[in-house]
Length: 480
Ligand code: NAD
Image (cartoon, rainbow, N blue to C red):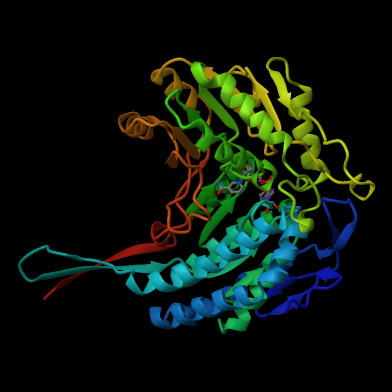
């Protein structure tokens, strides 16, 4: 499959496009170089947007049936190349291979889901009465731009590309600097499936160069961004300057709220998984544990014990926990622990002991639980983006709500209780785009609307709701 060998290049109008400058793609497990990556910039972005605009004129006129057929064909190719894609993803990100396989499967599901559902996406008729005939059409924007983070490259680009293409748009994507290879491979597969050249293009490069050029390109009609709140704000400004819509999927500080009546033994594996998965570098990671005073000691003790059993190693060897994505990210996570002024580190808190010599240069951080953290502490308010959970206790339901809503973020939350009434009251009171009850996350959640409240962003991706994000409504009024 992928023609990517020693150099990963941009993919524009169905062909690989190298750049004069390159930068190294580093293996986060060893610190060694995986390959060189083309450092695309304004020229490559312009070429890609031009190609996408040319493709989009014809693509917008295709039938939903034809788009559906190609999307489902792309899903088949993604599944065919599952092994290769998962290895690229695991090597680039450091994530355990089993999680990389899951990411490939979810990426394929996006192409299937939107391939299946686009055939049932309609406008509506509006009964104005008399001899008036009124209907709405859902029309594509044109060329959509996508700038995404490094934590789930295939899932993030897959959900954007599948929705954009399904709705008659064409797209230009900029993968994260650290994780370009699976996105370029996906572009090759979309092309192989039979989409027109230029329907989906990828510019590899750095955020401040390729990302900035894409965000400001006058040919982009809609911008999708997944990343930090700080960069998201820049993207929103660029979109506002040009009066184009944007979807922002930003950070989170999501809480697992555990009540005294919860089934603790059923909850603990989920609480652990919610912060261990992808080494905690998940926007929706369960990075806060809010726990009722009566069960705090039990939950903390059981989580700390589970953290002690987590197998750590190189992603491609499929441990429970791989390295962080980069040395820079390790420095960031370590900084939060170094600056800790309160709370007790009951597990982890630093790089793990006993790793083999070959992984000495890797960006590893042990699963970490800090107990007794005040909601005002930096580590309880800001996104760490590592395998670090902080525990705070509460006494009443009202206090639990106040704590759960006590950060700038509002992405995901979970409530653990046996009381049906409390579960629904909490679900209504918590400010978050998704609330889970007695579970956390839901696989890829392909079918579930996903997006933030507050500084976690706006707009919704995933699910049928995403079609509304990627189309504009035209109302046609006819006097008969
Ligand atoms: P980041 O904001 O630094 O980078 C994200 C993307 O933006 C990268 O592709 C980067 O190259 C690009 N970029 C950086 N500066 C840019 C600029 N000036 N102009 C245009 N593009 C630019 O974020 P990150 O550190 O790579 O990712 C981690 C963040 O992403 C976390 O905050 C996490 O919560 C968030 N995230 C959110 C979701 C979600 O769906 N809500 C999913 C995954 C990650």
